[in-house]
Amino acid sequence: MVLTLGMDIPYYATVLGSLAAFLLIYRMLSPKILHRLFPSYYTAQPDSAKPQLHEATMAACSSIVVGIWACSVYFLNDNVKGNLIRYDAPSVRYNCAIFLGYAMADSSLMAIYPQTGGLLYHIHHAVSLFVGYVGVFYSCFPYHTNIGMMMELSSPFLNLRCILNDLKYPTKSLSYFWNGAAFLLSFFLVRVVSMGGYWYNMSLAAREDDFYQLQIPVYICYLGGGVVFSLLNAYWFSLLCKEAYRVLIEKKVD
Image (cartoon, rainbow, N blue to C red; front, side, top):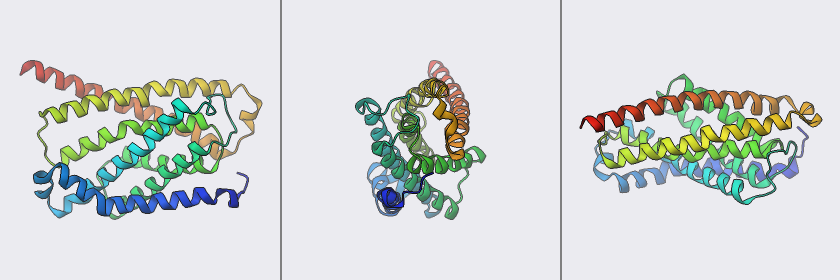
C-alpha cells in the first residue's frame, strides 16, 4: 500500500466519526427506537437482555445506511465497473469507512457484552473488519468492494428477526412472517445472486497482468474473503430455505 497519509485523513476521520456515531446510536437512539416500536415487550425485558437488543438495533441502522449507499453506487455510478482492478472510487471508500467504523463499534461491544452467536458469527466479524480496512485504504476492485457492502441490504431483516426473537414476539404473527419472507428474498438477491457477478468479474480480472502485481492483503481480502463469504452465504441460505419450508408446511397444516 502506498503511504498517502495526507490524502487518507478524510477516510480516517470518517472511520472514527462512524465509530463514535454508532456507539451513540447504541447508547441513546436504540433504546428509544425499541421503546417506540415495542413498548410493552421492551419494557418487560430485564436489563441484562437489553444490550443485545440495542446492538441489533444499531446493526440495523448501519446496514440500512451502508446497503442503500452501495445500492445507489451500483445503479447510479457508471465509473464503478466490474473490470476495474486499481481504481480510486471515493463513493465506495467512504461507504467502507462507515462500515469499518460500525464493525469496530460492534466488535468493542461484543468484547464488553459477549454474545452467543457462535464461531461462524465471530469469523464473520473478523472478516468484516479486515474487508472494511482493505476496502478503505487499498484502492482496488471497487466493484467487488461495493458488492460486499451491498450485501448489507439483507441484514436489517436479520436484525429485526433477532430483536423479535429476543422480545419473545409471537412467531406466528404477520409481522414475523413477512419479515422472514423479506429476509429470504433480499438474502437471495444481494448475497447469493450477487456472488455470481462477483466471481465472473474476478475471473475477467485474472486475465490482466495487473492482477498479479497486487499487495498480499488485497488477495487475502478479495479472494480469501470472497471464498469465506460465499461459503457462509451458501450455508446460511440453505438454513433459511429449510426454515421457510418448515413455516410453509406448518401453515398448510393450520
